[in-house]
Every structure is written in C-alpha cells, then in structure tokens.
Image (cartoon, rainbow, N blue to C red; front, side, top):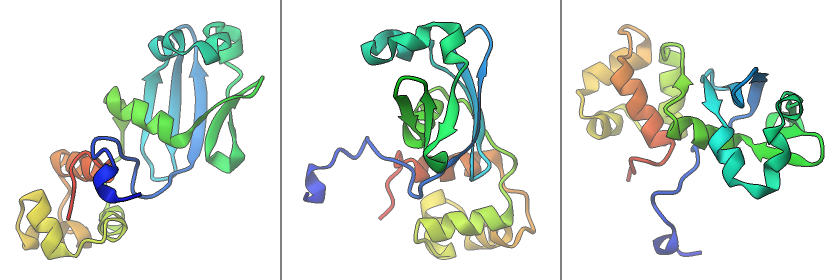
Length: 163
C-alpha cells in the first residue's frame, strides 16, 4: 500500500510491547495494566464496552474480572473468545492520558533513539533541544524532564511524525 494512502493520525507504537500485568479493578470496569517498556496505567473501559456490542458480556463485573494475559503477552482475554490486543489497550490508555511511567532512564532514552532511528543531533532537532542536552539524557547525567518523556511517547505513538 503506498504511504500516501495511510492515515497519519492512526499509528501504533514503533515497537511492539507485550503486556506484563493486567488486573480488573473492582466496581468501575477499569483495568490496571503494564507493558514491557515499564509504562503502566489504569484505563476506564465502561464507555467502550457499552459502545461495542460484541463485548457486551464484559458489562457483568464478575465476568469482566476474569481477564487474563494471553498469547504470550500480546493480548488480554476473557472467557468466550473476547480479547483485545496490547495495541488497542495502549491506544485507549493514551487517549485517556492514563499512562504513568517511572522516570525515563538513560538506557530507556537510548533505546527510544534506536527504536526511532534517531541519532542525537536529529533527536535534538525533533525535540527542540540542544545536542548537549540530548547527550546528557542519553548518558544518564541529567534527569529527563516529563515534557521530554511525553514528547518521546507522542513520537512513538505516531502523533508527531519524524522524517
């Protein structure tokens, strides 16, 4: 498919991320989730469930609580062949601004650079920073500000294109 036919507003994380933890929270159709990159969050599923006829059984709190990580971490499933991929859950978390991450380490920042095919100079251009700041983050000499972490997440999610 030619790239000009792709919707630039619909994008998945640049690198697949398996689920490492999932638990249904009592009472409000919420899930506590974490992914292998260390991000974690609580997402509210009630509105999505009500709007999606195929998953109507999830409205039952007892049934909803039976979620389990399946497919070696690539999906979250319930009895009766109801499942959601890691990417759907991640997109819901991004939409709900529900992700919480530990502070990004220098190792994680270097992995982000590599995952996105960026050297430190290009990263500085895309993030609107100096190469020295990028180097300090990558070497772990300087704490990476939350705003930079959010910018990295936006680039990973395809919300901010890089060329």
